[in-house]
Length: 353
Image 1: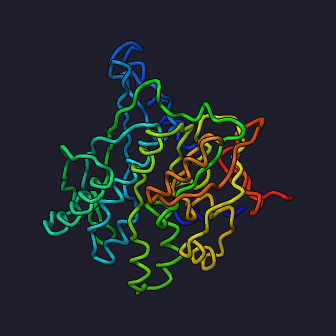
Image 2: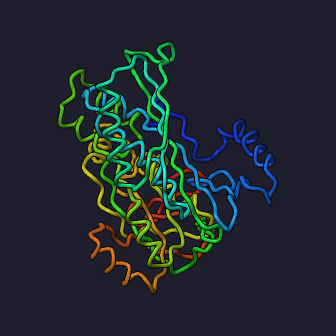
């Protein structure tokens, strides 16, 4: 089958084969700290974030991510006061997936030339993102690397690292997920900060003057799910969290459980994704592999707590819906019956009913 994302210039890493050369050396660094020492890594690579031992049953959770080619949309609009939100969101939304509470954030800004107005606009977004996530920025780095950046393509890059804490015996991996559990879905605000290479190729490259309304929609900030996650963790039993970013629904299969995730009530697909699919003539299975399609975050909770959770989240004004349930399976997989989609072994495909 044609790989639209690869043709747009992105090699997806869902099956892990492209990362073997990197991971074999990264994994070896775990041995540099003994299991009983501070700094010992508690999880294998592959979860949304990792946790290191810091003593007294506490772990320090860490996650790093950037904004990607969404920066090019910001440059087209000459609007930089929201991409800092994206940078914070992409990191804290991963961090909470291991059950950690974000506490701090570091930013790295690489620029071709230092422009104080642009930097301040980026900082405005970082401040707003940190406000939503309730984290501080104790430091960071601004590097002028003109020889590395091409002003005709991009004049800067933006990356961050989030830090949080979690008790070692409360780390979420999904290993306790079982038949009968409920899948909660939390809506996205749009593309978030994923799939922009393909989205830009479909929506922006055919036109030398894309509309400002379209650019503004693409620049909609990534939603931050820290408040929802912390409220759930503090009041109910949570089996697992999944941040739906790059690789779409495949992110749910990063949870460590041999079950079938049945999405029998998917959230509505946002119009922006319908537009991308229509203009790009992209198959539905490819769309759900490359984009969040309106589903930004997932929580797996106990069936007998669902009604209380639903009432609680409604009272808190947190938009959510039950989108599916957990069923038994011989191997990890995810199905969307209404779309005849199955996700397994690093890919999403159509199946015959």
